[in-house]
Image 1: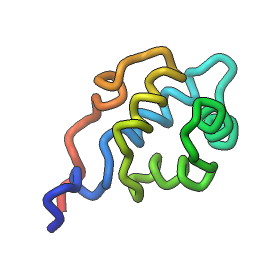
Image 2: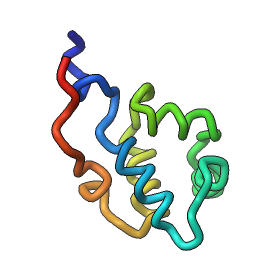
Image 3: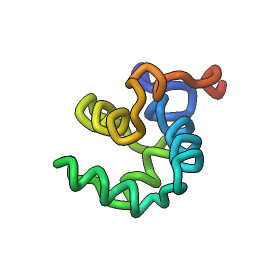
Length: 87
């Protein structure tokens, strides 16, 4: 088992990111979020957003900070997640 995994995921914020995107007014697609990240100077594409949300991709501190700024929240809010999946 990897020591830097959160259950079966490579990140904590992915599932929360889905929620923040859908609650955004208007709701943001993965592509629209990737565009906002790129405008903020962080090079992410739609596929990277998809991999973050599915837990396949790690998230850097720079990406986390930028995501929080886009959603007008804190990094802590993005890191609140239920218990990790067991296995």
